[in-house]
Amino acid sequence: MKVTVDLGLCQDHGQCAIAAPEVFAINDEGRLEYDSTPSDELLEFVEEAADVCPVQAILIADR
Ligand code: SF4
View 1 (spheres, rainbow, N blue to C red):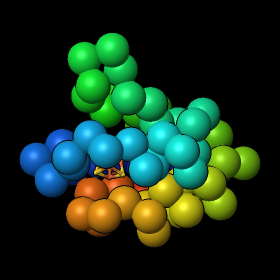
View 2 (tube, rainbow, N blue to C red):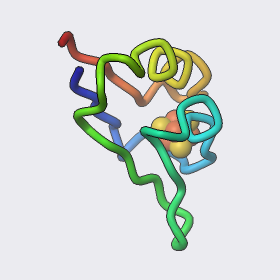
View 3 (spheres, rainbow, N blue to C red):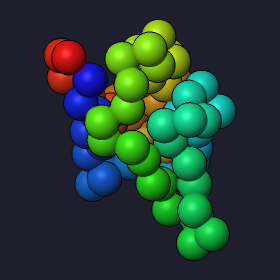
View 4 (cartoon, rainbow, N blue to C red):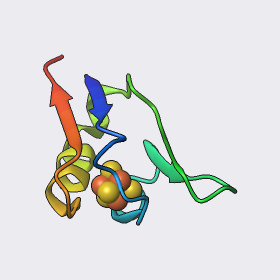
């Protein structure tokens, strides 16, 4: 799948990193880093991350 985060919306709170830690992480500067092409096996976790993102900044494109 392809994952895009609108970094203009993202507020770096890291809820996505709790829901899908293999895909999203908050770096040492406190900013979001993410894998834009994670394995499709992680889809359910990425969907959960998109659901819990308070600003709906995570977009998932089809495989
Ligand atoms: S949950 Fe949303 S706002 Fe928070 S770090 Fe992740 S993408 Fe950014």
